Structures are given as structure tokens and as C-alpha cells.
Image (cartoon, rainbow, N blue to C red; front, side, top):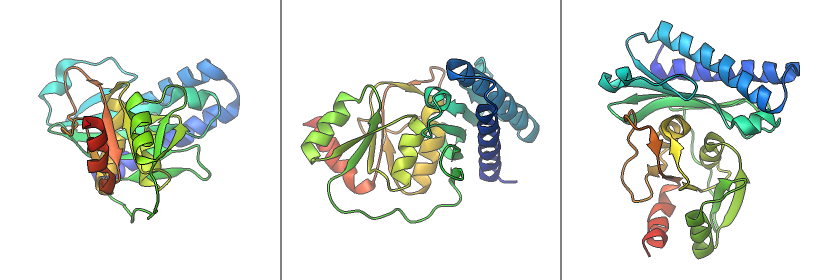
Length: 243
């Protein structure tokens, strides 16, 4: 099984389990999110230890150690990206499974289990990006859209589209539901590694807001900002940000 096949299989399986947990109605709200995080994390961590025992691992829901820092290959996972949305019964949450090699988001998969029928986007099976004319759509936080995103939308005549998890936002660009995902409020490596791996495979632009590359498997896992967008919008966005 290739790395991407493993990532996709694990993301899909975790997504199915998360839906079963939610459908069981044994938990609600924050308790549902906590249970989903714990159970999905256990599944993903155990599976990766079996299938890729020599690789490093970084998960939002596991205690981090320095052991991964000496590894070239490190799996970076988020068992439930958008725990709030998952707990609220919404569809805009995701499961992230990615492999970073030498700090680069090299491959991975993002499952969107809450969508009708469930969707898994993966770095080894890409299609053509949908085409669309007109002003761009920017996916932003439901509660705190980034000031930079608001400014870009105003300058480019764009439209803000509120959405939940980071993975859902990034995959909205991949799926042709938006053209730009610009975030400046800070995230962690597990929030973006899998989405970036998939977005890069689709030929999207992925970087920091200053244009520098996104680097993973760092001792400090905090990532201040990122930009995922259709390549034709990148220069226009940087012009606004630097203006």
C-alpha cells in the first residue's frame, strides 16, 4: 500500500467511525467532539504505528515529543478538524492524514465525511479544477474572518463565504466552491498539512502570506498564516497584501 493509499484509507475509515459515533446520540455538543477526537485519534495512531512503524508522528490529540524531529518522514494528523462543527452536527469538518517528508507536505488525504455520501480528496487522484469567471470567492471563519481576507475581498471585488474547519475551507478551493483561502489568525501544523498536500497535488498555490514556503515537522508546531488559492489569483493577492 502506498503512502497516499494508506492516508486515504485511514481518513475514510476514521470518518465513517465519527459518523457512527455522532449518529449513536450517546454524546452531544462538546462531549461528542471530545469522544470523536479521542476515538478517531486512537484508530489513526495505532494504524500508523502498525503500517509505518519507523516514521515519526504528530497528532493534535497526542502528546508531542522530540522523537519526530530526527525523522525525515513524519505523519501529521488531525482526527477531527473542526471539532465544533462536528459536535454541532454540521457538514464542514474534516479528517486530516498527511505525510511530511523533510518538512514538505508531500502527500495525504482529507476526508469530508459530513458531505452527502462522504468525500475523500487525495494527493494521488486529482482531477481538473473547475473553471469559473468573475470575482473570487474567499472562504473565511464563521465567526472571525481574517482582516487580510476582508481587505483582499474588498480590493478584488470578491465575496466572503463563511465556513467551518480549515480542511473544509481548503477543500472548497479544490472542489471549485471558492478560489481563495487566506488565513492569518494562526493555526498548527495538523490544521494545514493534509489540505496543503492535496491542494499542491491539484496545482494550487500554497504558501505563507509573505510568499515563503510552508514548512512542517518543526519543534514549534504553530503556523501564523497561510494562503491556498488558484494560481491565477496569487500575484493579485500579494499585491493587495503588500500594498
